[in-house]
Length: 247
Ligand code: MG
Figure 1: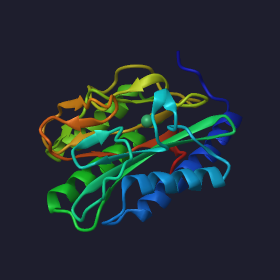
Figure 2 (figure 1 turned 180 degrees about the vertical axis):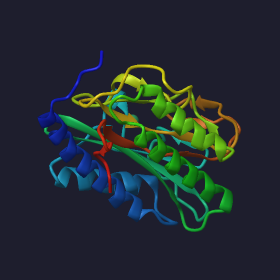
Figure 3 (figure 1 turned 90 degrees about the vertical axis):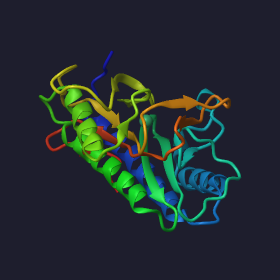
């Protein structure tokens, strides 16, 4: 069931989204060769808690950290650990914050030092796919207009869309209805209206679309071992779309 948010709830989500975005940009700026993903996680948790937020990933279904840090062939849900980031890696940083009972959720993928042109293209296409999806989050459109826009950008760039994981509604819970796939024909699904808040999150692979979950139960990686990127915004449907996790 999709719950419509009142304007006062969207204002609360704007505050949650703002802190989520600040934490994302703070952690992204710490990425450099030599840093470990655990150091990024510690920094994120401190940043969020010092500002009165709660890191929503920490303890979520047993997840042991405040951010997901997904390096190279890891698509999403990478667990921060002692892995040292090296020049030429990419790392996806995904994090959620609760402020006053409402959630924000956002992700970005960052180059560590200098990365090859094909990896730069993957990051650019995935960011562009997110923005194309966000642009469809207007009243009167259908849910799959978002999905289709994401898919079109990713495939035009010659990359593969991950279909096993999707975006989601968000509000008092991190994951609410509806699911927001990153693929499919336009004009399908529910009609969008003001009061709907969606986490739109393309995951795009340089190689094939297939992924698997490691034995840790969390880490999602590409089967072919090639890199993957992930970008995410929390967006209130509106004209224009209301990006609650904008920089
Ligand atoms: Mg999400």
